[in-house]
Image (cartoon, rainbow, N blue to C red; front, side):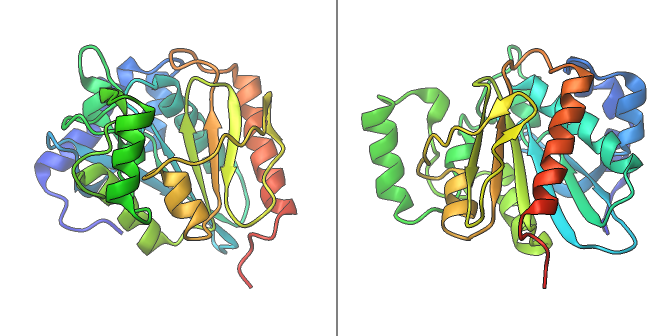
Length: 262
């Protein structure tokens, strides 16, 4: 699946468990190694490979894209993605999973870590929603009072990390996207199907959409269901039992919802 992987990129992937994943809560070296993350061929602003992993069944009923650490200071989101990746590896089901546990490695590795990427852009405001230039300008200047943590950038898809995720949506064509964040402790949803009412202890609370956000772009304007998981803490994961319960609730919702391809 991956082509033109050079020696440097391969070395970065194989040494990932000695690198930034050591910063993640509740992630053992074994869990990290078993993830077998590979470079996608795309890189962050500072040249770090954007890593991913596919779990492919013999027969595919659904395609699910799981993305985490879009904001670099939300450590727990990447940890949960890795725990779910391990569950996907051990499950026998007709789901093609694609995991991107850390979309924003530059923000995560920064000391201290920060929400934005290396250009200071909030990646979750950088997707090409309609009237992006006007709406993101009004949102950032009037509603956030130019909060630097929520700067949408100079243009939609100006950042390599958001462009990578945009390209993944176009090529992988997921039936559902699961976007893991923190720390608001709720479940959000955008899309054309009935949302899950809960994942574990997180209950549905649809807070609306923002200009340039993933939920707005994919869920509202492209009819691609987006389940947004807001964990209660950016620094601590739920218990392993709770992460399993969230995973089972997600799979149960998928089974009960018309996501399957006809």
